[in-house]
Image 1 (tube, rainbow, N blue to C red):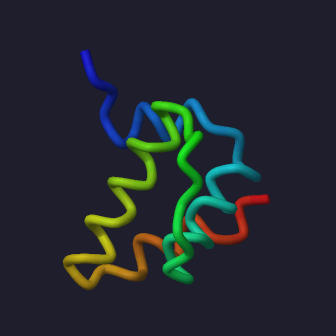
Image 2: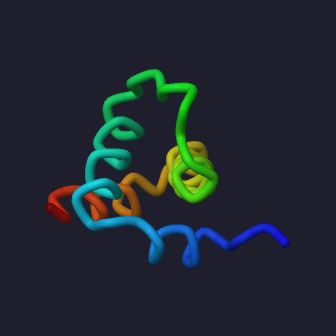
Length: 64
């Protein structure tokens, strides 16, 4: 069973989710060695980006 975005986000440390959100925000290429939770989280954020909801990404910035 695949986790939902919310489940994956909850499994990540706040500092890590903020870092990943910053990469999505800045359009930085993601490393290949992401965990499954990190991949799901990044995919979810990229969907927000695709549909123009950058405020959803902004909410994850600064979670350190």
